[in-house]
Amino acid sequence: MTRLFITLYGIICYCLFIFVFIYIEGFLLEIVVPKSINSGSVPGTASAIVTNLALIVAFGFFHSLMSRDGFKKQWTRVIPTAAERSTYVLQASLFFALLMWQWQPMPGLLWFFEGSAAWLIYACFALGNVVVLWSTFLIDHFELFGLRQVWHNQTGKPMPEAIFRTPSLYRLVRHPMQLGTLIVFWSAPVMTAGHFLFAISMTLYVLIGLLFEERSLRREFGAKYALYQKRVPMLIPGLIRNRRPEIEYTQ
Image 1: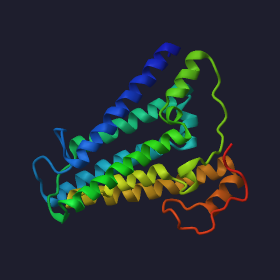
Image 2: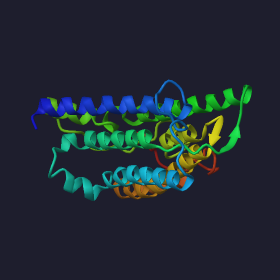
Image 3: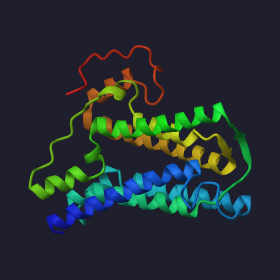
Image 4: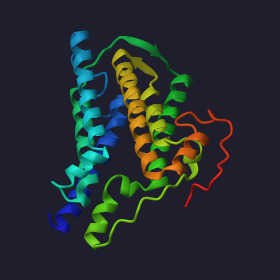
């Protein structure tokens, strides 16, 4: 791949991610988009469960596989290193788009809120999205989604080494991005059986994924991350009372 091609590829992958991210909002809130989490013909319950779980497993499998260091090492023998993160973003976007397109509705109602209660849940939904986006910019939004890698490749500059930082939200919880994601998944004024299956399945995937991510971070940053784990809770703010750091995390 030429440098220009890799740069254009990274931009296209990022734009696709933005489109899917925006579509997810409509998919979960059931507004504007042609296919939402509760729309479409209703199949049998067993068929819907099998189909929906298969979609989540497919997304989760490739999302987790391509984030593993061993896979990256082999994968970058096939594609340029500068395009690796963009390819990861591409597959995640495509698999989540497939999930939303093929999701089978399950209309059984678990709870229904309207009026002030519904608006409060919508506020939580908005807050979750703010936390997700804010978290990406607190670390490095453009590196996270592959743009910094392709830009450094385009300009011929090497990527700087990873630095362990814990700015702002990262001093409250170790994974604010995932916390915001879970808030979004569960903030539904109308919780159908299908939405509940989606929320509980994705929650389990996030928790399992975090266990692997924590191992990788522990290997990469060693004692600093081990101490960070002791001082800062994973997802629930305030879970660990004494969070005063013994070392300075932010660099």
